[in-house]
Image: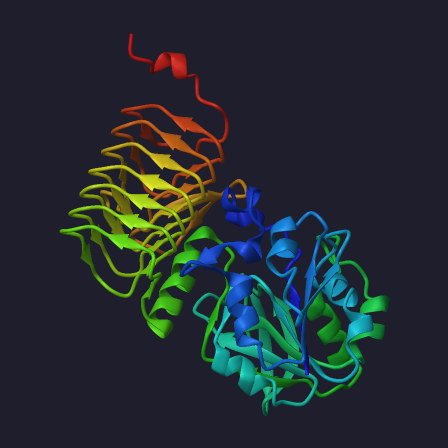
Length: 387
């Protein structure tokens, strides 16, 4: 059996992290999402990743993997259009899945035994956010995108068993409201033509749509696989490690640090003296200086966090933290959520980042500043410079 991973999307809702990294290459438990999925799909004869030619990080990561074939989607015209790019490489039934969501390995292997056409679902408390299935006697009768009056709580989770009969439908598919050719619309066409589409409900699905979903995926993997501590990592005297955590190659956890569970510290990172890190992801080659607190936060690569910096993660009114996403205030569903920091950001000492604030790549945040709004453009440092 072959598998097709659709991974060419831009991931705009995950900005600023996806401004410098492909969505599928964002790290959880110190490995890219695509790397975790590739490991789960090792039983497949071939793994086809649909990317775009600008995703050098995906291309480079899998360049020497003989089981992986990368094909290109030159225009981002939706999941259906992406799948079409893999047509010449699949003959019989095959797995198709989104390459930037997290699935359970047991679910993937279970659905791989099903006949085509099978669509996987997952129970959700928020049917208004997903494509929702109407299921009768374990067959899919319809798929409705983000319904006002959902007919079930079963969300289409983007994991399929398909066969080549899908490709003629995709070629004749009309563009949707967003100007894209969507794979679920092709499945609906099959249903309308009388094809029996089976439903298979999975136990694990973490849609990585927003930055905080990376924390969910990180927790899931650390719970499942346990701590991932590289043998070259240095843990200095007095440091307290609350497992499970991930600590990457060449990373240093300084004296008297408190590394709380579900934290991932990337390759060559340095966590200075008496720093507390709680349920956070710090990507490779970033430095968190002494006496800082990093709670429920995502920090990109090559960042420098000045001493005494605080990433606040709880609102005073105890309400859910909201974040600006594509111009809209979006409820994270979390009481605790810190900052989202792009690659290459530099913080002065004693900065405070308020809950849910984002900082774009390569920004400089001056000492003693309180970040109360997203920082997307360069700050006028002269205003903050010490005379």
